[in-house]
Image (cartoon, rainbow, N blue to C red):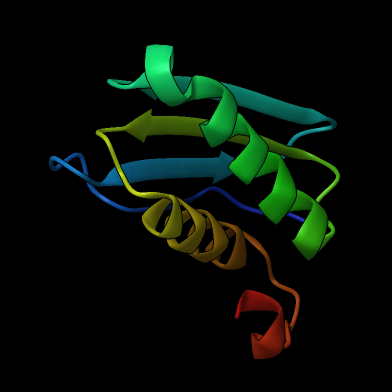
Length: 95
């Protein structure tokens, strides 16, 4: 999947995450999280897993996490990536 435009998914509410994507030459991740000390490594692992699943090799991600569950993080990231891409995507990829 190729990211061609900026996009956003999520909110800044408690237990949610806002993810902003933009085109980039590399994978650039900026993580701001209220639970980074406890779960920062797990959050980054989830992000990299989703990027690999969707074949994203270049993207700028700005993540503002307010304690979102892993399933919420995955859903918001997939939504932001889909919004930032103009490619047709098989829905099975997102399940």
